[in-house]
Every structure is written in structure tokens, then in C-alpha cells.
Image 1 (tube, rainbow, N blue to C red):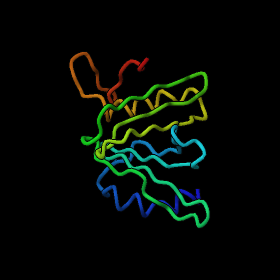
Image 2 (cartoon, helix red, strand yellow):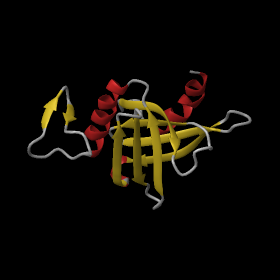
Image 3 (spheres, rainbow, N blue to C red):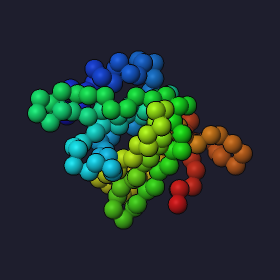
Length: 139
């Protein structure tokens, strides 16, 4: 909780008060596993990732991107390890890869529903349930 409360001002600058937070979770970068914890915040309009400096615990912005500016977004759940690998190409062209650890294996579908709601376009064959798009799991 102290880490989250230190990063709230950063999130407020990036995300408007009118935006609903769909997901706020800790994650790690796959390309730098020893770089510490990151916080990922997802709304319908933005993806914001922050981290803290190790020594002074100052929050730093790692990624702030509009959903429409992200490309090649892929996530792969692993129910055995209770993790989700999330990757996207940022507007600057860098590939961002994160590992999201989920405490409860049954909660993975909540993460998938939030990611699917934001990143999958609505189309034929999809049904709406509680304003979130429910789709089959990504294999």
C-alpha cells in the first residue's frame, strides 16, 4: 500500500478523473527481471506503467500511452503458474513485455476480461455482459 499511495499523484497526472480504472496490478519486466516491481494501470483510454527508484523510493513514469497508440498487443495466461505475460509495442517503437503474477488462479479470467475489453475490438459473434466484452481465452 505505501508504494501505491506514493504513485497515485503520477497516475492522476496521466489519467483523468472521468476515466474508470479497470486494472491496477503489480508486474515485472520480462526483459529486465531484476529491475524491481512496476505498477500497471489500465483504463479504456490509457495504459500507464510506473516504478520506484530503489534508494529514495521516488515514483517514476515508465510508460504512459493511449490505447490507440499501442500496437501488437498480446497477452498469454498461464493458469498453472498463475501468471499472464503481457506485451505491446509502445508509440516510440519499443516492445514492452511484462509478467503479471496473479495470486489466485481463478482470478486470471478477471484479468483476461479487462484486457479483452480494452484491446479486442467489438465485432460479430461477441456478446456483452456487464458492459465488458467476454471472449474465449487467448491460447
